[in-house]
Image (cartoon, rainbow, N blue to C red; front, side, top):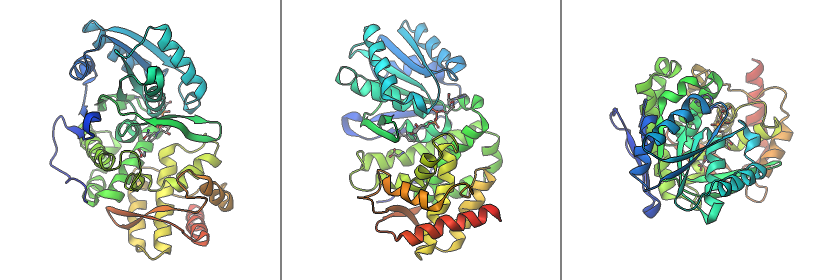
Length: 378
Ligand code: NAD
Ligand code: GLY
């Protein structure tokens, strides 16, 4: 099995996610939020839309989505949720179920998530569970959501101390991506999304990794044509993985978690308020790469190349000194990707290829973390 080829640039790329009757299209454009109503009508004869968004996205992006729907005579309700990870909770989900009931929502209603991964995961979960499931559309507004969370149907909320613990696989009707919305995204959030983009190159596509290395200027200034290409390729790679292992049963979908075992531990120990997810993933990818080096699976040049690209994209690459290696290893054993407490990692074998490796000796994990600390203070 090999990933689809990295094709020539296309002005308005679209990516198909082939999942039988749950198949859908990801449309990627610039300035295309005004197509929301048409995009929806092409997929569903709906007249009632409930938009879930957050306070940072309401103006101007959700407002543009509302305008497009109102123009096409939709009955539209807009629900604005407090921004941040704390909203991805059972309590907020309950409020939103009640809201849908109060608004007279039924299976002919379409929920539209306009926001980052928090809104997408939360709105998707509410749509998956209300009235045993109503349709929803993803309109992702962070780079992370455009290249990762809006694609593949994982939706859910957190329990206190257990991230993404309650959820479902619920595929959207479609994903509408407008790279223009990234213009208002804070710098750290934008760069956090770039870490997931780099991840796709490392795990599946050496040519894409080289493309990123040679388009640093365009990426750093958020050039629209480059972003369309980067978002499209990331979505294409994720769609390919999801289409082969929708429910993470064969181990293929797990390759998307490269760097994430370390990252989840860094996020959990930081109380989810220090590093952003993509920042933790950037550090985690380098830990995983050093681990692969320690296990003799790759040489140091591959770790260095990832480090150089991530640094050029102004992402952190070293474990911050305040983190204790022992506490990180303990947190990793509790990660839901660990198998009965035994440590499993997605590790590179060469650029563009990774493997799931079980039973990794703890001493090697400590070595990978501690090497990171040395580099942090170098
Ligand atoms: P987020 O949704 O919290 O958005 C980050 C911040 O950016 C928020 O303050 C938000 O209000 C703001 N924002 C969003 N779009 C904006 C815009 N265009 N302009 C200005 N501000 C904007 O965070 P995120 O990084 O998008 O997503 C993180 C969440 O995604 C986590 O909960 C994570 O678990 C989840 N996730 C899910 C999957 C999946 O497959 N479902 C994959 C990866 C991550
Ligand atoms: N973000 C990992 C996945 O969707 O499987």
